[in-house]
Image (tube, rainbow over all chains, first blue to last red; front, side, top):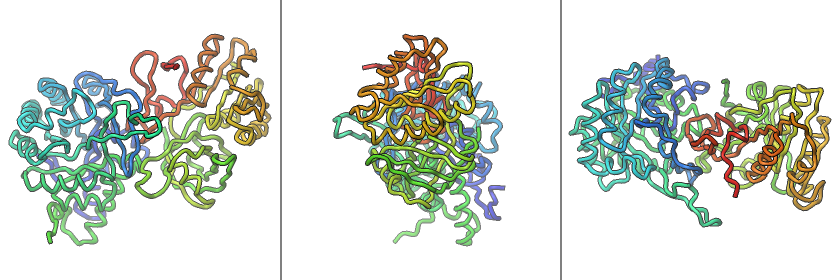
Length: 310
Length: 262
């Protein structure tokens, strides 16, 4: 019983969905969950989010696609994925057997594409929720426009909500002037929750060759380096909306999870840390149970927005 | 596929040349499952900088308990590993990826360059035990004698003789491994196993293609996870699109890959 690790109540709710605990895995860092089975007891996690799916298969960007930076990494994968048809026929079959709620991350180039993917996934057994990527900074014609204009973000949210029977989480881009405004607009459009932040756009240059280190030139920055920015944005958004906020960005340990929850997150996603320590998500759940017991809290939910201001 | 995340103890550190290091690690779980051509992901420290693990081919196993990695110090991660002490522990994931595919009916030729020699040592040992009727022919190249000698000795200890080539001519042929390969007749049934710098592998692939030899190559790419999640470790393939070096490889049939020879 992972909701009662050592008798501690770790349950949280995202829309109509109840999670055993607030620890999820972030899209694009956990494959289709099977890859992590040698290392992680999946039934110990709150939820997993699978790699972003588009209507048609995408082969992604040329190499090099990833580069390490100070306490972080840049990626320009280019949304490589098998497409929604093969996802449903191949990947979903194996996901149906795993003992943890699965969120499917979706992306598209047009409103109609988002609508169509959501429609294809509606009623597919084993899909517990949808996470809408309106913010991927890696593809030249990707979701950038949707994630940066409140009206567009709202339009995508409405389109996906209209087709979905499961909770819809909208994943926000940090590469905007006012993330709270985007959050409010997707809330008004019916989002069940928001998750943030997606990667920050960055770049790396090789001084010797004078060339960019990524073939795509720019990429998304993730890892511990972005945690303070993510924490600040979660804090702001949590005050701007009344739907649950899922915190993402540089989270590695139970302490990080607690910090994000104090800032207002109902749940969190662990991303880049999965690459460094495949057990990071399960370790965080254990540590969180420890913390809640040690602090003598009735439940983990008491932490949400519990920041004590000066 | 069984994989482990293990805290492994460093039981021996050897230094060849000024910047080449070999670590022997105590890891029964990983060692007992490891196949030639597979690799491990090694954490270089406990801090967030450098953040990511580094991939290393398994270069040798012994007694089902110990395995070795061989590397050149090229950056901060490898520098940290080079400064470890015997008795310290490293976090390792492995064994990872698809290794070399072996058919004892064929004649075998191992072609290694620089640190690419590492996985071929493991393969050489495997072949000399498994395919006893036809020991593999071995061609190794490196910058200098200092770098190559210890590795040649390792092959000699397995009872395998080595054709050497060095950039500076201090050991064996003064030039490239491909020069050596050109001068040998390996018969139509040859299977080459190649690991080394990309241009060397491309040249050996072309030579094998010309002569009708089968050719397997072990690809090195940058990767964040080593287990199929990050999708960073791609190599372009002949049929279009990409394969993932971590789980489709690192060992590929050379003819399946797209070689952009400059």
